[in-house]
Length: 102
Image (cartoon, rainbow, N blue to C red; front, side):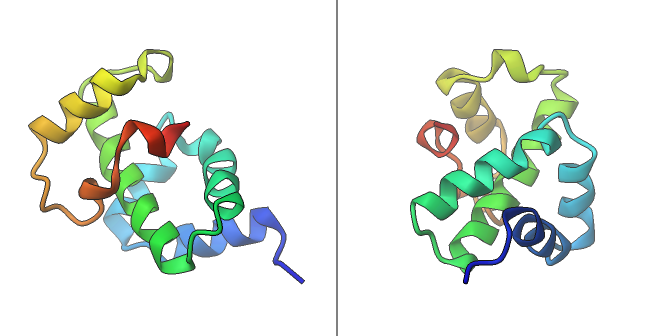
């Protein structure tokens, strides 16, 4: 039997390093993590891959905060802008694409 989604999300977020965890939990994207993880689970992503995507989202959420970007303005161009402005070797950043959010 699969773990309840909330428990899964909490376990995944709890397993992140302290700094990315704080970026994510204190971001405008935090309320959307349940839908994001549910999307990944429906896609049958492995736990390790899901965690990698969460690290990417954490870095992206930090960039959003620094850029004062509201969630309502998220689109393919803002994701690409983040990737251009960020060090793409950062753990997780290379996993972020617009299709990750759909």
